[in-house]
Image (cartoon, rainbow, N blue to C red; front, side, top):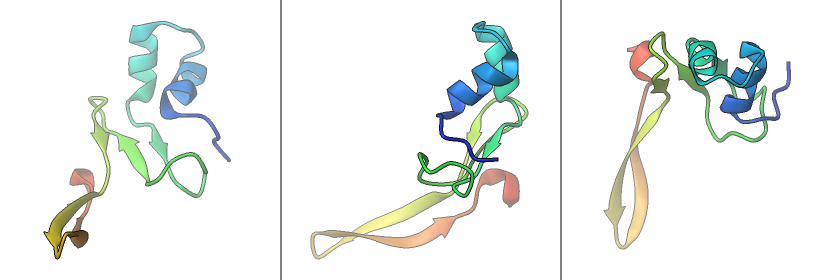
Length: 78
């Protein structure tokens, strides 16, 4: 399944109506992977509370340039 829309559009379609409570419920557990959607930069997942969970990056500035020093896994994958 290829998803070309942002997560909120996918959730609206999943909810079947433009109702904020229905859309919020539809976003719970929604997972979108880069392989499915060329419009996102990283895999994302909404947890069972509707909070976004994704990789995070620890960045340090060295010689005036940002350097990624560590990639932190999504909280749900610890």
